[in-house]
Image (cartoon, rainbow, N blue to C red):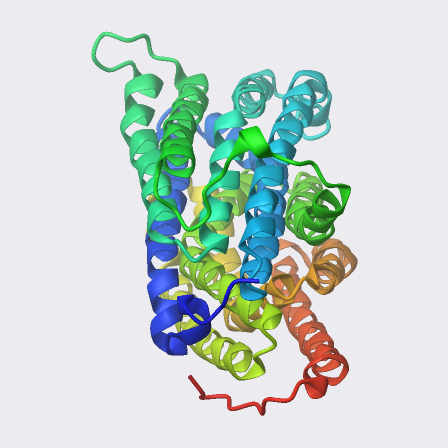
Length: 459
């Protein structure tokens, strides 16, 4: 076993450590969210049908995101915990298993892109224009998703070892490439043919491929803490199972967002296509607001994982307190922005009057859940870092599937569309209560048995 004393995750003051590790992730994820918004902004200039199509395609994209995020969480958490134990050799082997699993995941996603896309979108619309946009865009995104999946595997390996700057650079490279390519391919600049919605999808997968190339160069040619050596790779069922056991709940947790949005789109289809477009716009904007908090959580998770492996609860609780304060303050500010400026936010997407009538009310009511979500996100991040991602999965499942969808249907069908949006606030409050309960359970079952005392503000 190697000493853990030289690793900054076990020695650097908590506030400085989390900011150092989170700021690169925050910047890169903000840019990632920005290019998702830019996608929709450019597409909204084609017509409202194109914007509606991207809103319908969003849940399918979230399925893809859930798959590679889950894999990334499994890699990140497993690598950081082994480094916390001082076992660098096993951490490197875990990283190599991560790439193997990424290849298997890509094959599954690509096959799904060929087989299931047409039938899926027929559930939501019979409009031939919207249907064609949905199928063309989504098939390209899924079949050529290898860039996104392999890039994420590499970034998670780096993050798990405490390297946050190079993953930031990889995401920036992909995001900026996508922003540049979008108008060129959508509108046909520089003599290229105008490809419309298909152009938006092609721009996305090309940008992901460029990002993947950078990550592969860093992983296999750079001078990193973990140096991968595929020639000496040794397969282990135990390592594979460990990554999957941590990553699968995270995949399911992220995938539940897709199930929720799919169910919500089915409910909203009973009202109007405009309400579906509004929800699509809302979640693009919400992702931009939430990305800094997810960046904080990315920087916090390996800190918690490392110190969980080292059995240092002082640093675990210090990380939780600091991350929660930052997340709560930021999302409270985000709530104020949505409350005060819903119309300008909607007009970014060339919204029609019908979308404005629906969206102003929706934005002001859905955003009330932001402060509650802040604490839930950080607690769920702690569960993932400690290898207890099933708690996060349970919280997400009950909040989004058991509470949100039935409550949305009931409120919408009983009191109308304007009341439906309160379901988000109610579901988030219940989710926070559950997350607190599971954390107290973890404290009583695990932390009480450790020797070092808890100092919430400790270093």
